[in-house]
Length: 158
Image (cartoon, rainbow, N blue to C red; front, top):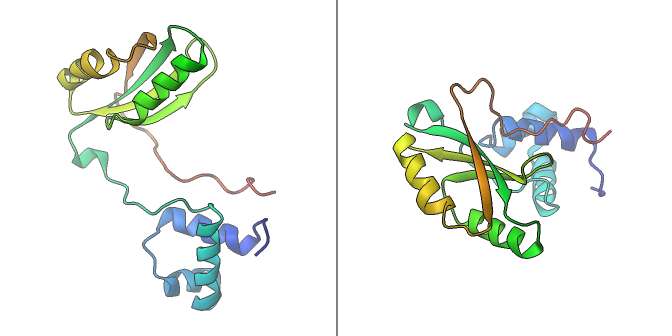
């Protein structure tokens, strides 16, 4: 397999994004190949970093929680403050996503907490102690309409 992906590799990635729990035999049947070459292709996709890890996606309706998007503005746009902020964020379990963004804010966090009381405590005692933060703006999710971990592959390799 070269550095570029062929149609079969893309099909394998698409299928594994939907169900990474398939056996090699089941995956092979879906891509019309025998198990051995499919196994080798998957191992190469893992080795080259196309597949980072396999995981279970939990149903958020089964777990009592609220999701919050929190826009962060740093006190200063210095390398020191950016490093301080990102290193702190990486250590906080409730932060499930962190994005460096353009516009009025510097970062957007996705935070999952048990309830509003937990969020208030989280802001005061977890985010509030990160000295790099100048201000924040919270947006509470009322209802999740769509959520996927899958990356669209239809035009990614064309």
